[in-house]
Image 1 (tube, rainbow, N blue to C red):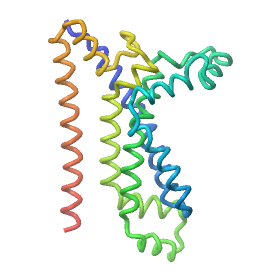
Image 2: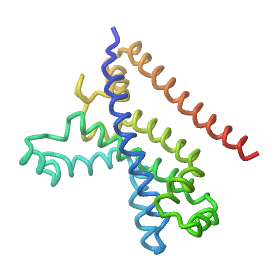
Image 3: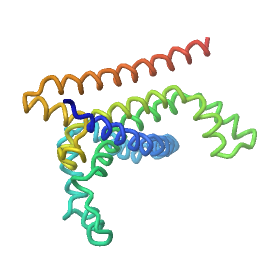
Length: 224
């Protein structure tokens, strides 16, 4: 009988991670777009994009080094709060956030940069604050790209494997997400259970693509 716990763990992990990634990606992208120093912008952009370029296991290694019981942050939480981050459900969220953040950040930045700067200048001429310009002008015009980035980031967090394996492990009922469950069932020779998990992942991925295409087509029709 198929254990559906990995689905609940993955959905819970992906939902919390996209909540964090979405707003963090928007804030960071807005900050990078507003930067005037190109050298600083290039360096920061490289840092924020790095997790999607590196091997997931390498990212997981760094996360384990930082959040492990002997790492700077992990040791702090153990000593002061008696909370172990590594190999816990929190670790799956951290891995998902770090690996999905570049997709959200890059999508939001690209969407922001495509907005006509004259619209922003017009808002300033009318006396709008920078926050109002961001909320009512920049965000409104960049929304399709931002939504697409959020969907991609959610799907990436749902399918995260390498970094999760390093920092969270494969603990049944605690950190065994869908990708980990597929790997475990295939390794155990339970192809039927693995197939059930794969089908669920494929359905979620198809829904994500459908939503992105729908938003894109609807926006194109509005422009016409």
